[in-house]
Image: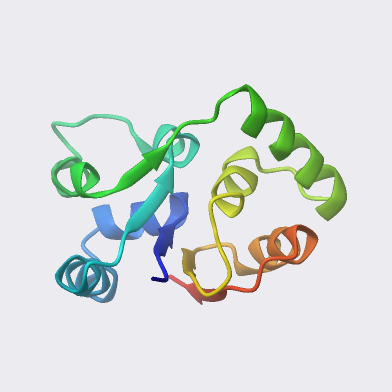
Length: 126
């Protein structure tokens, strides 16, 4: 089943109360679709759980993938092939599988990364 993948910008949109993103997350949960993100994306946006209540409530429902030694090297390789620089973008793109939907605030770099990875996914701007 296709997943709903959140980059850092999508997590920020969720935290800011974007109703479309929140509705997509609810629909994913109701249909059994996984919501996925990378720990690097969480690190990029996490500042204060007392002030980020929406994000703090939502994250336990995500599959949050760590950047281990293998993925770190894969990120570097993907950044080189795509000629982009954002580690969090590369890390989240490594989690995307064909048919997934990736929610992003940076569709141009995400497209370059997914193209370099050979992954066919839907990109949705937030």
